[in-house]
Amino acid sequence: MAITGSGSAVPANLLDNQGLTKLVDTSDEWITTRTGIRQRRLADKSESLAALATAAGRKALAASGITAQDLDLILLATSTPDDLFGSACQIQGELRASNAVAFDLTAACSGFVFGLVTASQYIRTGTYQNILLIGADILSRWVDWQDRRTCVLFGDGAGSVVLQANSCDRLLGFELKSDGSQNNDLNLAYKPESTALSESVNVGKGNFQPITMNGKEVYRFAVQKVPEVIDKALFRANLSVDQIDWLLLHQANQRIIDAVRSRLNIPEHKVISNLAYYGNTSAASIPLALDEAVQQGKIKPGDVIVTSGFGAGLSWGAAIFQWGR
Image 1 (cartoon, helix red, strand yellow):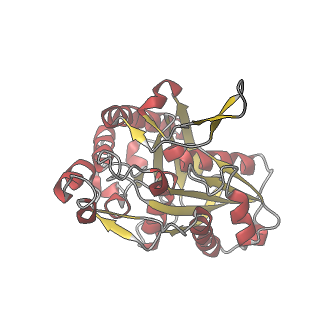
Image 2 (tube, one colour):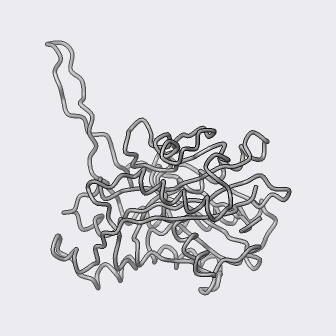
Image 3 (cartoon, one colour):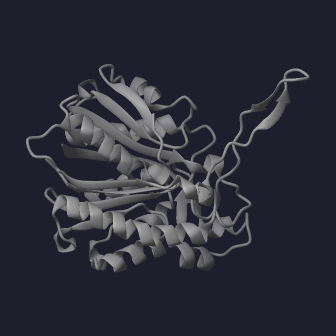
């Protein structure tokens, strides 16, 4: 497996921290100090997840040098599809990727890492040759904009990569984990509305409550579990921290990124972070930051990247890969 191209897309609408002060009792200093976020992009009510994901996918295809007709699989990592039955097929239709099977994968903020490992297995077994992996979320749909604990954190966006069969396997190691016992610390839970169909039959009409999060527990979980899972992935790859060119974590909170970097003894100049400009875009955050770093010329062919996603589920994982063919 080799990652041969990347792409990204974000909404045009920008909401900075000053704009949030008009919605909730907060301040730019409070948000920046505690999260590192200065602004976020938010989708318009008419903007769809499929459109954002398709735009990111087209850029990745162009960068890789293949066409949509060459694709065998489109894998969409998202928790916020336009259609509860899934949005990957919509993207397949928009791209006119008629030869590709398409499906959604839901692992929240770990979605891109879980998707990367899943897609790689199809290539390793020889089942598929060309895969488009997209991480995309529009979390603004599910944020309580009166809850200052959560509304300051999230943004919308999409990022994508093309994975292709290659003579040299560039996925060097990975480790995936889940712990459902901590599900209540971060979720977007089903909230039924009671609907009576008869005197004896009562069903729940579908709905969801806004995102809820126990910030202290999620922070504690991330700074403990992420270094551990990266260490395990490094062991599987037979690599040391010194052999890593870049650390690319899920862009959730700058304090988490700094704490993980410190625990792993990775120099600050090896850390990729664009959290300040986009906020937490869930499954989009890693590929969005990856594509930006590639476009800026930071990441070069042959660079070794360690990436880790973590979030709702609770789920977390790490993957180590070498950029380029």
